[in-house]
Length: 256
Ligand code: PEP
Image (cartoon, rainbow, N blue to C red; front, side, top):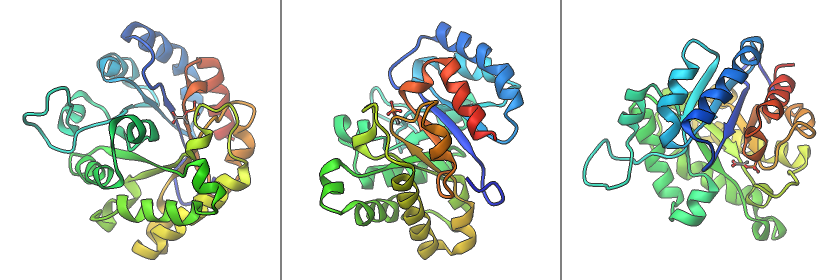
């Protein structure tokens, strides 16, 4: 983390979990802890169906709400989809874009992710854009080249003034839901490469301001070490964000 230049963010990605009632209870439990975490922004990425309850429960708290996906068009004949404009109208502040589960199961590509990043920024949402390599790519020593290519594609067409609104989440696919995270050194190495890539496109000042999260089996036990690295500015936490006590323990370590 480097708070001199950029925000620390802990974002919980609930995936397809929790009802509106559970959402309300979770935020009520989180609220007093969030109030104490002055150095760490807290985001909950909730399923669409929970967003109205989440926004309502998080009003006047230090918790911001994110959607887990959006369509790049503002409206139209896209049955089953939700636009960024709709999310903004609800009071949602962030949107996860290009999570590896959406790439794997729903056919999202770097190009469609790039369209969504630009659409999110246009309607005032902050995208949390996910990048990361497979185990096969890591084993072939392709990690840094692959992630750099992803970063270049997803930032394509993003104006320099908007760069710091983008949060990049480095999520090695092999560590998601695996129970074993990347090492702090691996996370930092890729975080540094992501920042270097942003620096090549937009310059040092922009690059310094971008929050880069690590995601993939972050939990209360490994969070401290991961968050101590200079290019790990927070976490995108899946499984360990479903239990409020565990999530709070991660927030407390990010707040130190
Ligand atoms: C995620 O869903 O983005 C994630 C990192 O999941 P987990 O923490 O469960 O690996």
